[in-house]
Image 1 (tube, rainbow, N blue to C red):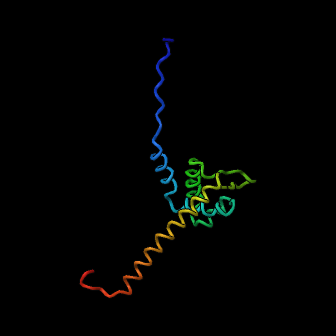
Image 2: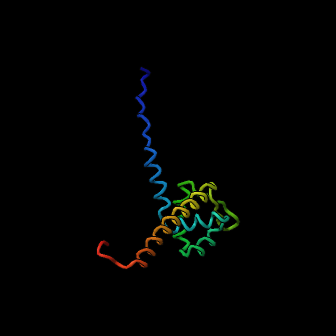
Image 3: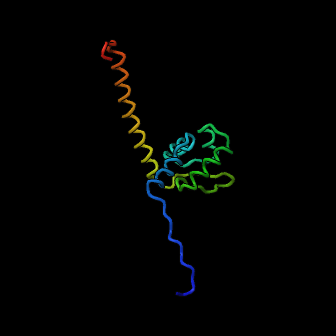
Length: 124
């Protein structure tokens, strides 16, 4: 022995837990809207606050969450802060989610149309 204390084994969270945390980060309407806007182009903090319809202080909190998750990057431009997506795959993820939701809602619309067009019967 060299006299060193044994190192604790590195504890790594299972991938499913890391994924769950990632999706929790996306689980706020303001953060989703910010990411959608940034999918189109970079925006200043002021532009984002106006577009999302939240107070600048609240936007700042939401942007801090997105920065910690490495979903957005920021840079100073004069007196304002400018934000961009950290990775274009974030925009792709939002597009995939939109397609999935469209398919789910389309299926529900079809079911609703069936319910409205068919008279109730004894078997329903």
